[in-house]
Image (cartoon, rainbow over all chains, first blue to last red; front, side, top):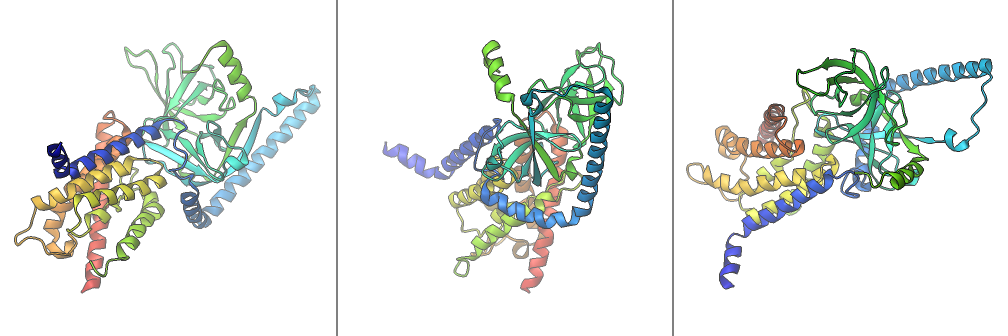
Amino acid sequence: MQRLFSFIYEYRAFFTFLLLELLCVWMVIENNQYQSTKYFNTSNSVAASIISTSQNIREYFSLRDINQRLAEENAELRKKVDQRNQMLYQLDLRPIKDVAIINRFDFIAAKVINNTTNNYKNFITIDKGKRHGLQPGMAAISEAGVVGKVKSVSDHYAVLISLLNIDNQVSSKIKRTGHFGTVQWDGVDPRVIDLKYIPRHVELKVGDTVVTSGYNAVFPEGILVGVVKNVKLNEEAQFHTIKVGLAQDFGKLAFVEVVKSNLKQEKDSLELKTIGEPK
Amino acid sequence: MTRSGILPFLAFFAYVLAQVLILKSLVLFNTAFCFLYIFFILLLPLEFNNLVLMLIGFVLGFSIDIFYDSLGLHALSLVLLAYLRNYWLSAITPQGGYDVGVPPSLSAYGLQWFLVYTIPLIFAHHFVVFFVEAAGFHLFWYTMLKVMMSLLFTLTVALILQYLSMDRRR
């Protein structure tokens, strides 16, 4: 016993090293789980208030750009509302009565206070949290397209797992043909994302639009992901190798809208009853 | 060690703040990152033993991780760096040995020694950071490019700061 203790004492540096590294490895693995780690990230109130202050200062330099984009979006939306009104007026459509369907999605606008695009696993911090109704698993979109999912929330802040994260997969489809696939980033170019699992019989064109499929109830259906940039079909492959140019320029992300899906719980519990526990 | 009761603490916070507020958003060519915070460990005086270094490394890495949303990643690589530092220092002892109480810096032992001291340790740190983040070797050459570019960037910034602080002391 004495020997053992003196052995451990002699190599105490090495054992401490092992212990600390094991702890770190455990944390890394824990952090890779979707919806994990509540406190030790940028949604932590101290960390968030520091980067929020820094972002407030930095924001002054991009205000002109942001205003410009918001104004453009406003104009676009106004045009759409007007067109819709015209259409309703002419067709004399019956309005949808079911309030639950009309209010299926709520949108909560939030400001981006922290964002990276160069890592393999990128995260975005926003200034809305539990107090504003955010929960892990919600979708985040911007005026240009898909942004990511909520990973963890604190009272006033939330961390999103960016679409530019090699672990993030979003169910999508090709708008023209309606075929389903999954978009996932390969970690290299922040402007390009891969579309996977489109079978080889599908005929694709460069320029096809890729949108969310709405199969997962996280994202509303038809949110823009990007435009097909490059299609390759290897001799033996089952699926196309598709590169999609992202609609959202993640380097310029300033505001996002978090989508609160009011019927998600109903859909999930119904599916749970019939299909069973999801994988 | 006498004047340095509070100074290392201030330096610690200075390194963390500089890293997460300035250097975090400073990425060149999409591949070159600047992880200057590791120089807090590299430039601590020689008297610090492995245990203390590793504990400091863990705390520093953990603080960086909070801001990078990468829990454990920087702590892991910095503990490794802290563990290796003293072994590497004793392996490359310059002629005449080390002076007591002097940090292993450029001004104390010269450029050549400083490069020999820092490059392998920075490489080890960056290698672990990027390959653990990529969770494997499937992007080997791209990740390797990131490692080398970041090594150059970190080293360049560190050398500039070393030369600047050297002038002030004279």
